[in-house]
Length: 281
Image 1 (tube, rainbow, N blue to C red):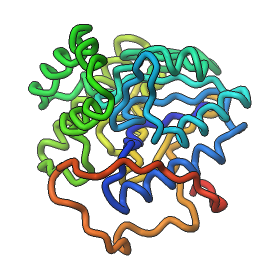
Image 2: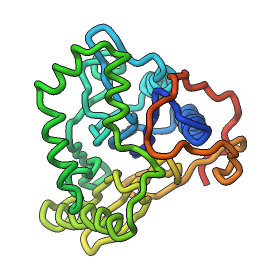
Image 3: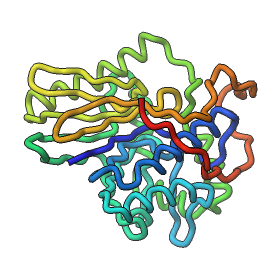
Image 4: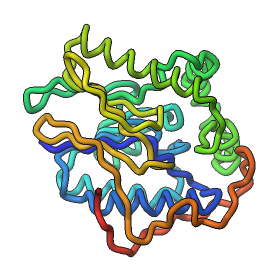
């Protein structure tokens, strides 16, 4: 079995600047070339920076992404979607219209003689008690119901302000190390005590493969900086990075990033890239 694991793409329905647009273009190009390549694709949280599907409404700016996922599914690849800390209000759209399996927290699998666990990881940091309280509050059924009653335009603007996503959000190296240490500790526990051979997480935006005494902890990284993903082929895990010929290096992009996380951009549809991909390196 060949498995692709992606996390922390943070597709934005309203890209704020050239960095966001470039990341979207790169991720869409990757999904295009992924058609027909995998038996299973695990979307391990924070694929969308914000998601909600109302009873009769979805966010049209996500159409290019949904189109890519539909094509992957139609070519025989199973797709599993796991909630992250930005995309968790899933109703019936992915299940009923894209034939995807949706999990709130974890997905486990036995294949090729390996017991594997996939989860985003936001529950397993050690330095974010405020977020964990907010997570419990925002996932209450009542919170979801109230959000569904808002007009989508207003709801999305409110949701964008609540989102803490930003690859430019400052975090000290000590806090970042603690965050990563919590994920590593969880993976070690699941390998040692629950007999998993492979534990795949995201959330930290730090791509890595750590060989443990009894198994492997793999982090798929992110698509806001690293454009990284995991491939598991016949039970063997590899960390890969993707780039396309036309992708500019972030240092060459002249457009300045707005300070902070202020949301003032008008929604623009992401473009379906026409250029040919160079593949993974």
